[in-house]
Length: 295
Image (cartoon, rainbow, N blue to C red; front, side):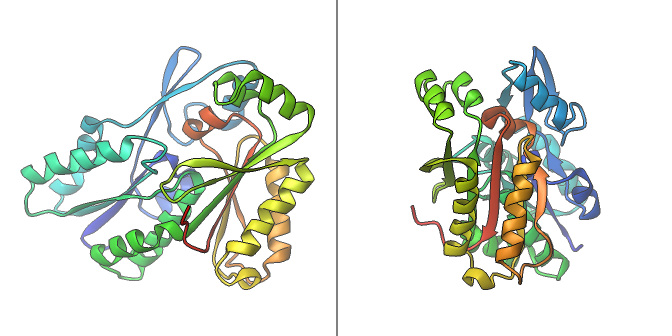
């Protein structure tokens, strides 16, 4: 694996087995659910189905980012082993954790001046962040240097397309992200907001579409429009979802039908607790390589 290690945070929303199989250490966010604090440990402390069931029952989890001291404790053992570090962080447009990682890097380099630490602000989230990580792992395994992998990440991270929709506005209302009136009206009219992650890594609503069937068709239309090569796209495609596997499967089936040259089947993952605390149940997210995000 060479003299460097690739690390990330728990919010890449990939299966626990992925990290062990690919030798990827990850730092855990935290969340509080019903008065108890948990590590965001990929569904080990609270299985995802239970987490979303408790939200459905009225629980309002809160989240906290990884702080500087936690990052220092996470990074330092690798430096002590004589390894350099490439850390991929969740979008700074969504969380302040990237800044914590940057500050930890500066403190540790003062102590280990002969080592290299690179921190990449992925401008990505959930399994889109995971899809970028997966590409960097492929490059590492192909023998690319830390510098080559780092430069690829910086040059290409905005080509990672993220599109989301939600069929349940209840949690958005509870969390104050939309008004009670907007949520009620949205649910009555069966409105499904179609969102993406923009060029500065923030989540933004792009369209409001009436009906689940139409929003599923539209999210795949976005992939036709924006994917590298259009319908000839031959890269990987990841989906993440929050307690709505049937909807995710419908999107995956339509993607596989529309893009016959995909690199493998669409991979469906669960949205983890930290991002799920903000979306609630009913969110499906689609990720693929495509045109550079410019707005």
